[in-house]
Length: 328
Image (cartoon, rainbow, N blue to C red; front, side):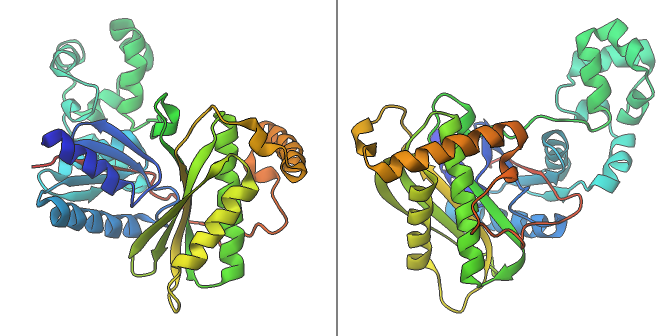
């Protein structure tokens, strides 16, 4: 039963961010980079997630939000039980200074004991005062880890299913810097997202069998709408389907805050006769050239003329990660 609830929690989390990582049976990381514009919105979203978990499962959860996984995890620890806490970039040093070293993920009782006996270190702030070479002399390569985590440094990414062998979906989303009902702009964003998703499909050597769009309105109400299609990894097919889905789903008179495109039913083996059509072959050649440019210079260096992203996110030091922990 606990495993079943855990799986349902992961599904629920995917409604709020397209990039999630199940870290343990009762814990997930969520990438908030393209889902919220600032920490205030991230905290608002955190409260919505907590209410959703309570409504769906009658359970509590603790959420930590910060600029990376390490600090999001720390914020979650500090918020227990059933709390919500953010560690903003300008608060990191103050938070770390007086905390016991054991509060950091990756530091256990044995390491804590050695730090205390060798260096008289009990707090994270004191650990920051130990030179790197001294930590390495005692802990070897683990010393570099201690040096980094004591400063809140963590460059690890939220690992989605696409990064694993059992990949089931690929998705991208964008939160706008102002809510919009401009269909031309939205259509341009759908083209950008479709291209991004299709590019990831091709890079992973996948074809998809279904497309889903996510629309989050200004009041945070979120809907998902999808349909099955013939196997594809072409921009045009993902874009055509996502546009149709948007037109079927959009609520007149509403403004959109977030837009997402995701694909599922991933497979590596397809019937290539499906692509005998000349137009598909022509697009394939164009995409091959675009893919090569993107691999060398980045995805944003080349796009279709109808792609519109003038309303793209532009927050300074946005939250990057949330840690949702502790079903009870």
